[in-house]
Length: 172
Image (tube, rainbow, N blue to C red; front, side, top):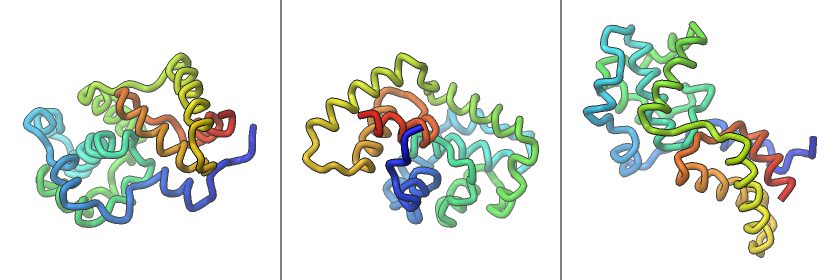
């Protein structure tokens, strides 16, 4: 495997929510639509309601769902919790059963009409990255990772693991 192309701080940025989410982004990406609300399991525990809703919002906003949903800024957590009638502290109990998180992730992806990239998608992204790497005057790998994330979102693809993107960027 090639050496990592991102610094530890850059990698961390791609694994979590940003430290702050602007109000406009909260409104655009974290406001649950009527169809989102129908999908939130009303009979589930408060922790499962908030966890599921956060997965939907994270996919919509980031293009992936952070492993640690607890990295969400407090204001964003409060905003989503109010919409699903849950206490923000309930998030700590979410995902005690790993299959719940996986099931919710699959439901959220289907709801948002997103899918995981297949080999062909990654090959296409790799070719695209090579062209971008040649065109960029700035030889910053983080720029290519950012561009790859934007392209995946535009194509309706869930961002793969950061290791996968690092390998594609290193090859480019």
